[in-house]
Image (cartoon, rainbow, N blue to C red; front, side, top):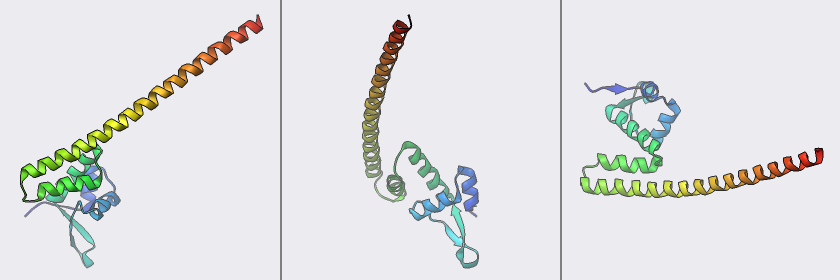
Length: 136
């Protein structure tokens, strides 16, 4: 018999809310079976647990859930591994370029903040000198 998990099991293990897990399910990242009266209880497989783990890893890398789903789905398909790896590299390359652009924007913003800090410190210094002259 294969190991199964409840939504609470996965939420506890991955420190997520059950709402977040249901959202991943809505996005097609998880596909639990249903049991109980009216199929209200979700039963997650080891495959779902692995998909959730990979989804969270992709999120930590900064990938969108759509990108994560594309990559995870590729690895589950019986297609050529070379094509899967090329797609993975394409997604990672695109994401790296986006991060590099964000980093350049942040650096420009940081440079501007530092320039304003220098200007404000210079003005404060001149103000303090003028006050000393007027007091003396």
